[in-house]
Amino acid sequence: MLTRRQVLISAFASLAGGSLLKNREAAALKKEQHTHTQKTSKLQKNGHYNPVITPNSRTLPFKINRGVKEFHLIAEPVEREFAPGMNVKCWGYNGQTPGPTIEAMEGDRVRILVTNRLPEHTTVHWHGIYLPNGMDGVGGLNQPHIKPGETWVYEFTLRQHGTFMYHPHADEMVQMAVGMMGFFIVHPRKPEHPKIDRDFALMTHTWAIHPGTYRPDPAVMLDFNIFTFNSKVFPATEPLIVRTGDRVRIRLGNLSMDEHPIHIHGHSFTVTGTDGGKVPISARWPETTVLMPVGATRDIEFMADFPGDWAFHCHKSHHTMNAMAHDIPNTLGVNQEGVEERIRQLLPGYMAMGSRGMAEMQPMSEHMPGPRNTLPMMMGKGPFGNIEMGGMLTVIKIRDQLASYDQDPGWYQHPPGKLAYKLRESG
Ligand SMILES: [Cu+2]
Image 1: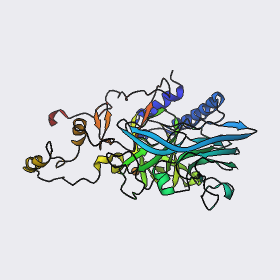
Image 2 (image 1 turned 90 degrees about the vertical axis):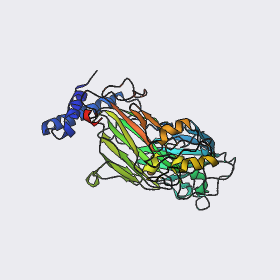
Image 3 (image 1 turned 180 degrees about the vertical axis):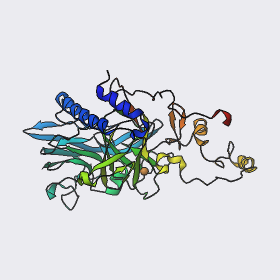
Image 4 (image 1 turned 180 degrees about the horizontal axis):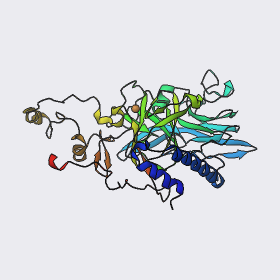
């Protein structure tokens, strides 16, 4: 059933770019938004916030032990399927990379048990969190390292709210390169206004996994070849499912060795927080791309005003490509006539490619198997053909009507007259 608010919003959405929205309507929208916030608060099972969704991942369960929220992280080797056709031998926490999201509330006393099942020592650092110095987890500086087989205890009271992270501060170069990281999200004690309807967390990461191998190479400094959201490559990245009119927050984290300009389609957002805290309202401005620095988090918020399947991706185009796009000779514009035959004498089945661009690579890769355990350079499929991206890409699926947030609504059905079309005489 459509609520009045949804009708109002879809009416808004159908106006060109929303520029015709009158002040009176804007005021009504604001009022509706407020009522909506109050209504859902009453229905909330989890108190005054909606729990964070970490796509392709999960939230770490806890138990209350005499008023303390007790979590248990197990640092261990894990295997992760980045997408069908590629399994990677990583290290992570509790069977996965990124580790499960720790979620708590400002004011909580938390106790985190860390068991080390790795072949070498580790520690856990709580990135961005105010805590006693002895809980900060820098091996050698704040504590002795946690040896294999040992369990150590971290305990502190959360005195702030926002998006933070956890990761080892021991053999950082190796342990982070192979996937050891996770989100630590602290909700504010006071309810947020306006309330967030859909709250997602995406960890960006860069990996060097040489074609034909299974283990990320920690020695690589710059030339990474696999780029992930929550250690998944598109199309294995779960879509972010949203209802038209929802207020959406996406929390982004970056513990990789590269910056990622993360871009939204069809909407604009504001950066509302970093791992340093909330951005004051007076200091916010609209953006469509947020640059994710290394060792930082960014919270972005927007109103899901426009239904559709909207791409959400890193704007470095190599970061939406997989391994096979790297270190290849540049054949663009090269006349390869005659070369093909000669090379075939040495390499049977050789095909000259790339002189007119690389779009032919995707259909080609379906018939030509690459090296073992490696994803083709492009691999997405959409309702209109190949989506010539893999890597750090996901889709925000915004719908007027949704059976459930937990069910993929399929591809967007475009209303008549709202789809680009081919000019008849163009042939
Ligand atoms: Cu990137």
